[in-house]
Length: 489
Image (cartoon, rainbow, N blue to C red; front, side, top):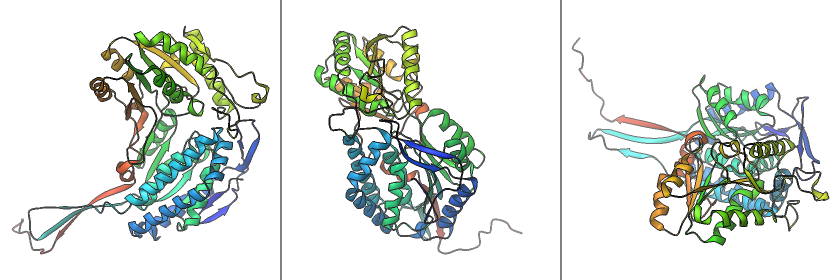
């Protein structure tokens, strides 16, 4: 059962409202808990505030903070299989995906462990021999970290690791839909020796727990990954206290294919780009934009291959894609499919729930492909966050760029071509935070992640991901103070 961790103690929430954590494969109950009460929210923020203002962690040498992160990485390696199994039960993704997630989380902790003591600031030459001037980086304060349901463990690591490396304290609010591995990570942090009050975790929905945390005057920073509407609400709520906010709000990501690309490679990568984790990926390549000479053959082959994707229990070895995370998410996908039909899109594959009896209890939906779509269609404009691929056509390079940028989002995109010059031109012209050339999806902890436009602000990962959790201070030291004599009186 998920508990809460406040000021170094695990306790059961005192609230009466019950939260069920369901297995999306068969809708069985994995865990049940109460969501945090207003008093518990206040206690968690107070614990983080006191740990920052008077506790040892912000004043711990950066190398020691890095050593703790390294211990967490070692514990993740030790518990990899159990964490991956729970992540699969909770999210529905395949066990292969969950194992990769744990490996990626481990890499993130190791990266920030190594980075923690590498930037001691810089010396500024003032041109005055008696002045010592330096710029230093200090921890920001109390951070509220709010995570999404599709990659609950991975997205949490992108926040926790740099926040701890910088010397901050925090209150974690995991998604109430898939919270289980977030609590497992906090237990590993406790085992690694994080001081009491530095890390606190509360369970609850956004309105009841998330909103009070983001509005709290004792909170210095909010990091949120999730939907656009919630991100906008958090930004508005932060205005009263002028707290720092970093948000990653999804994308509608173009996957641009020129006709000189290798056909089989493009087909294989296009399927993975959109149907991995049942399409529930903020960077999913949900918009396939194909040059005219290749269009018809590519649509036909992708439709044929999509119809053969094996759905099932993520714990089963033969499963290639699991269920959607909830009944509500499947209903949303069905609404998008209905609107695509109504607006004239051509269905190539999927568009319905699976027929297999063993999948009827879960939140499954067949991988779906729509061709002959255009930007006026809702299914092309809005982030579906599910197993829906739309295929658009283009003729010229400039048309491909215009289509790729014709979205209110700007998280990621890709270009496929054998022409190196064209690859660089198109990548340079796309207004997206990450652009892959002849690839789709990989990332490394050393490179920043984040979006343009409505995909959010701020960056995670890389050196900038650490800077998000730091304040920059200029220290001017006059070693020979003397009267200025500005005024004669």
